[in-house]
Structure formats: C-alpha cells, structure tokens
Image (tube, rainbow, N blue to C red; front, side, top):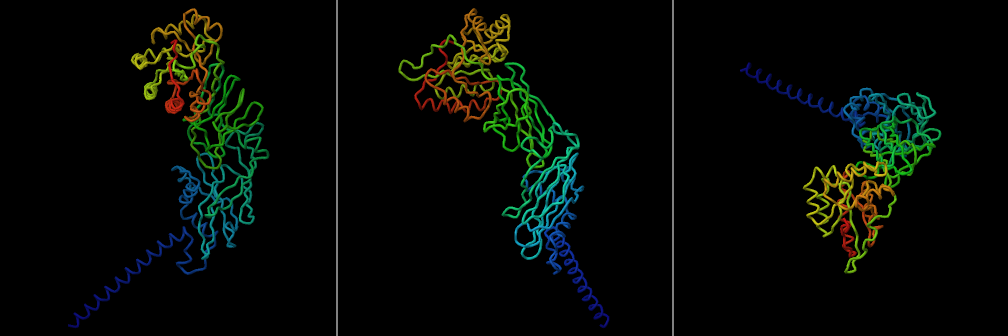
Length: 521
C-alpha cells in the first residue's frame, strides 16, 4: 500500500514538473517571438518594463537584425521593386552618417541614419529614420533614396529638417564636357517628413551651375541622325536607367526635319528627366506633345530623378517635314456635290497592311469612300487585299514600288518605280510621290506617262503617332469643303489612325459632309 502511494506521488510530481516545463517553454517562445518583433518595432522596452530605448539604438538594432527588410522597405516607399541582387546586396549595408533631429516637430528625440549598399558597380545611398512615439518608444518610418556614388559631408539638423551636402562622383562614368574623370560635383538635399511621418527628399541644387550643366556626362547608347531629305531615323531606348547615371542619344536634325521624343505608343514621357542639348550647349525640353525645336547636332539626355531604377520606354524620332504641295492635275476638285452638301476627299498612304481591313470596316460603317495610294512591293504580295479595296467601292493610286524620294531618282529609275507598281495594283492614273517630294522634272516625267500627281491639303500627321485626339484635332481643325485629307493605313503601327478615323467621320457626318474618293483616280 505504501509503495502504491509513493508511486502515485511520484506520478503527480512528474505531471506537475512536465506542466511547469511546458509552461516555461511556452514562455520562452513567447519571449523570443516578442523580442524579435520588438527588435524591429522598437517596443522591446515594454516587454522587460525597461526605460524606452533611444531612437538611435532602435534604428541600429533593426539594421543589424534584418538589413534586407530595411532595403526592401526603402524601395517600396519610393515605388520601385528591388531586384534579387539588390536585396542580396543588403549584406553590404554600411552606415555612413547619422544625426539626432526632431523630424516631426513633437519635441521628442528622433534619429536619421544614412546608409549605403553596393549594387554591381555603384553604391546606393538612402536615409532611414526612427521617430520617437508619445509612449516613449521609437518607430522606424521607412526611408528615402538619396543618390548613387556619393561623397557625403556630415548631415546637419535644422529644426525638423536635415540638410545633406556632398558630391556626386564621376569615377565610374565619363566626366561632363570640360570635366575630368573622377571629378566630384557638389549636391545639396533636404530630408524632411510628410504628414504621415514618411521621409521625403527635396533636391536643392546639383553642381555650381545645375541649370546649365549636368552633374555627370551620360553614356551614349544610340543615334538617330538624318542625313538626307527623306531620312526618318529612330532610336528606341529601353531597359533600366539608374539614378546618377544618365544616358544620351546623339541626333542630327536638318532644317527639313523635326525632333520627337515620346514612348513607343506616341505619348509624352513624364517619369524621366529629358533634356536636349544643342550645338551651342543650350538646353531645351520636350513640349506637351514630346516635340523639340532644334536644328543640327544635338544630344537627347535621359535621367532618373530620384528613383534608384526607372525602366525606359523612349522613342527618339527625327521626322522629315512634308514638302510643300505643288499644283497637280487634281486641283479643280468639287467642294460640294450636286445636292449642295460639302465634300471631303479621304486618302490613305503606305498600304496595304494588316491595318487596311480595319480602315475598310470603319469606312463601311460611315458609308464613306477613299483613295488608297499603295506601295507596289506590298501590293504585289497581297493581290486579294488590292481587289478587296476596289470591291468596297474605293479607288487605288500608285505610291511607288519602294517609297523613295522621287526628286533624288534619275528619270529611268522614277519610271521603273511607277511601272512596277502599276503591274502590282493594275493600271491607275493617280500617283502620289512619297513624302510629297516632287518638282517640275518629276511632274514632267509623270505627265509623259499619262499620270496625274495627287497631293493633299490636310495632313493628319498620323504617321508621327502623336495620339488619337491630336490626329483628330489636326484634321478637324483644317478640314473644309474640297479638302484632300492625308492619312495612313501602312508604314508602321496604325492603331491610332484607325481610332482617329472613326472619330473624324463621326464629326464629318454630324456636319453633313460627304466623304469621297478622288474622282480622277
């Protein structure tokens, strides 16, 4: 009996011991988990009921505990996505400077730290702050990107702001014109907080004459140089663009051309700093449509303002201006039909293409007709499309075999362009010289072949892809009774042209216009 009682007692004690052990283990787990969270949030003092930790200590411990999380937080706050390499680079996190400051103006001690990480050949610098809260603990606010490849002075606190000065180094890039490689150019920024307590950076100045001279020279990544009257070179810049490492495209813009800088969709660019530097060193910026008035050699410079990495989609185009129209055999077009309704003559160049069927559908929707000036080399490969255009009640014109400038061809070459195209599209009477490039000699050659030269009076400039609304505005702003409108169904992406055509015809319908093909073609 005694032995049984002893055994029962040992069993109870064992159960109690196991219970205490489990409770103790759970307490340790909770303490460790709470401590890990507190290490990041700055609330560890509440767990141990110790005096609140300083903002500087909170920031230092958080940086030591999980530097990759800090780097990601900085990138998230500025709207960028860090690459795997940039997160891995957090291992190279280095504290550069620090300063005590009252960033949110509540008379509690805050702390701003400046850190850097190595990424490929550059070092990114950013600021992170710890703000002291009313309960006495400190909270990390995220961060703000400062720049790349910097030499920093000691930051200076002034009220609720921190002024950061230093220099952008050019050791890893080519110096600006007149500078020496490795030269450092001064910059000045102010770090402050917004209403939500997040950091923001305000650029004060960059260099001694920032309005006249960029801090570092950009690496040339491409060219768009027009050398003849009909050249239309483009360069499409894509890929990542790093802060502090601008790039540039060399361009040559003759007096007969214009410079356009848009994205691939033809829209103006708003997320990059774009500067055009002409031969005299004068700076210009694209207007609201992405156009720049410049002649001669120039450099299109692309830079990222403050984001560490910005993805480029920049189409630089040097575009030939249409040549002035010359008199043609189609000058005496009727401005009104027999019922007194105003008439507009609609024409399309550079087809046939994948967009031609879309144009035909829009024309059919509005019971409108047009003349299609076709490229012979394209028409030869699409005889069914040529016939489809005619079957829909439209007319076909000759737009050369390969789209050369007629004024630069010998008579024999000019005749071959016309003859080959006639074989592809069938015998036609109307010829539209590419680019509208014509002169007395061209007109005489066409006349000897019993051809009429057909130009235009309203240029939609849809070939620039300036945006649907701009195409519509250009046509409707200039159109009137008897107008001959130039649009395009080929020669590149014509989605904007198709969309604009529908809007143009809606307006012309509402104003009582009749839309016809050129009658002599």
